[in-house]
Image (tube, rainbow, N blue to C red; front, side):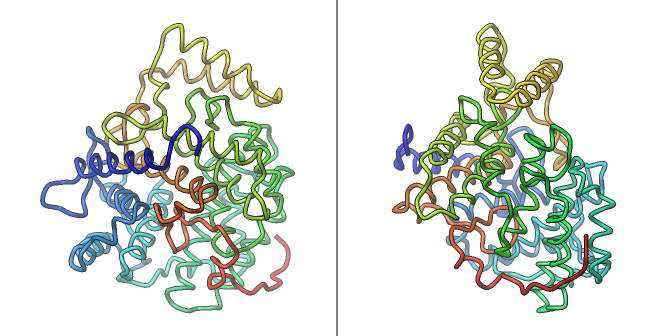
Length: 414
């Protein structure tokens, strides 16, 4: 890489593992607090496992430790629909909370080499191509409605999980209808929605979730080069991809992932995209804290004259008028919320933007690991990516999806 050597990355990994261990609930291998000042939940158990797996530390877990961890996760699964229910549920959108933690739980079980206790019967409501499209329409996925990308991803992943766990190839038709719907409604930038936000920041972050399904099944994501160009356009001088100064762990990763996948279509890495990715990785590492964890943004909670000058530079560096106005709006909105905490609703407590959390740490390291994978071939063994469908899976070649690809059928119009 450029500013950070591979030795430095290895050192930072060790510090992160020490920080992660400090969050573990005593005497419980599989329970971790979300941050130093937060509680724990099924979500946080999964996030901790994802970090350990990315660092290849799950290879050091004993068979009993893996079984105990899997039993803990399975204890949240219900027999009636096969979904996992966090207790308590902190998010006002119960469907989102349950579907999200179910996807994370199924990914975690796959990492542990274990199976869910019950069949994922929630997919029975999507037996026909039209029922798949009706769900997507009702959630506003074709309009790029806020949160609709998540809902689309959940549906796609559930169909994939059930297809793989049960061997039910009849779900291929449902999955193909999922793709038909999305291809029909995609905008010129490769996202969903028609407003200015859907063409830049919101559109890119929202569309990342559908990209997860495309990527795993090896389905060509039309206009991915357009999406990668938008990502490079919205990148700020420090390497972030958020509409506010300092970036954001999730927003930064989503954008960099689009660029990273676009590079897989090229024989040689585009120098411009290489620069975008390296700057993004440096920015991700810059958001590490002294405790070894990573945060949403190290500068979001700061103030003073220097912050004002940085914000002026941030907004002024916009490469398009639409991006400029979106940055100004988001910056002014953020100023009214300075020193407020961010509540992701995975635990009861909210956290400061500069506070180290499991989620931010996982996403910051996901970004770094993918850039290392793309730009530093000799260091590929430093990290490992999840083999199952979901966030944390990264395809570097067509061979990675040979087993997952599904046959295409004609299901009608979207």
